[in-house]
Amino acid sequence: MTAPSFRRQGILFVISAPSGTGKSTLCGNLRATPDFIYSVSCTTRSPRPGETDGADYHFLSTEQFESRIKAGEMLEYAKVHQNYYGTLLAPVKKALEEGTDVLLDIDVQGASAIRSCSDALIRSSLVDVFIMPPTIDELERRLRKRGTESEEQIRMRLDRGREEMRNWRLYRYTILSGSMEEDLTKFRAIMRAERYLSSRLTLV
Ligand code: 5GP
Image (cartoon, rainbow, N blue to C red):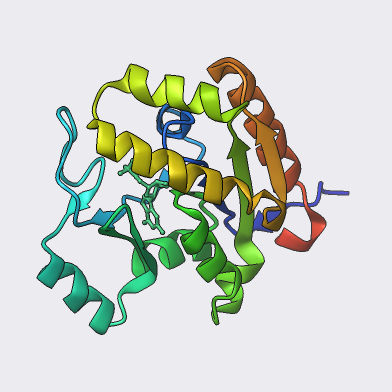
């Protein structure tokens, strides 16, 4: 008897966490593996030192961003910290159809838009994970350590962080953030289990 072989639809891993939690570093570590393709978001915010257009974000003007919304090119978008952020639909859909997993680093509004998306493939592919900072004080410490935001921006991000933390229950998984290694181990455990879900497999 020949061994059965399976084909699997791609998984859409969505990670949300208050700004400063360490999510970008976590996603950076995950990106360094061949496990997923990372969806590069569009944003109207200015690049931070060291950020590259096309790798960290597609940096767009407000007019360019709004014309993409009008053209129906966005899977989801939201205004975060007074700037637009959004995910392009076409590359995500193509990857999922090909059985490739996709990683999205988006805020709670974006995650909520994807949960109620009209596209059945997107909804059935979704695995959403919330990374919870240990405490607000620790979040503030991590944000200040990064040293890229003004005092006003830090305040704004902390206020928004508190708001975002109220939404953790909407996510399928919640990871209480510890060290980067611990967060990675926990995320990988989720990733492995989700890949064996029978409902995602087709016998070929
Ligand atoms: P930052 O300015 O620190 O890079 O990102 C600020 C926030 O925007 C983070 O919470 C991040 O998850 C969120 N974000 C980044 N890309 C997207 C996106 O494509 N859509 C949405 N809704 N949020 C995003």
